Image (tube, rainbow, N blue to C red):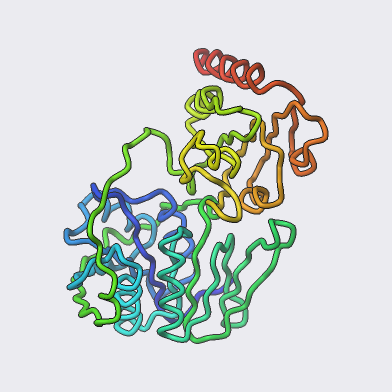
Length: 331
């Protein structure tokens, strides 16, 4: 892998309180490995500057400069964010824009690519430079194929799945400078107006799309997610669900994993009462280790599981949670 001669732009997703979201550390690490001496430029879409602690952390991740975007429209809207990114591409001469894979970011990436003629790859799980071109790796067709996509356009726009990169916070360049960047948004981007925002109550669990551990409940829970939630809390993981569970109203649709829901790639996936239908597998098959608990020994999920337990989830999960607590108490 070799560096490039153009800077890399990284969208710095953060919480309303100004803390970096966990997958941002991964794409900053990736950007630093690709940028070479060209530099990594962070994009901070917010009215306030990042805190001193966040700047120190960004410097350790290899970010060399932070652009605080000031726009005359709401940067939560993907059309506005795309125009802001396009303005920064023009200002910095960046050859690559990296974003964390999320519904909003993928839409912004698509808008940016249309506006600039860039080559775009979404849900990548790897990115290298070969012969002067960016080559992205991603799984397709419900995780059954692994592909490599070479971007031939002058600008590459890539969204990267969480848990795809090992974070390296060993850079010694110091905290990056913060530079304000004003953007005048077009009338076209103003056609949508954000009327109201309601923050979701904090469950205390990690975000589903970026969690290292995900425990998922399916039809076999029969609506009782308590053992799923208990095991997730013991493991410090997120709670997910299949489409059947969300359609039945047992859990919110934001927990749905699959082709029509969230795509996850945790280091550990535990499916409880999950049959393993194709549309669900398409959203989780790239997980590091897959554990299946199902009373049906013929459930399709066992075909892709690294470890399978044929049994009643209401017995297996509480036993697993109790044993994990016992082991933790001995530490």
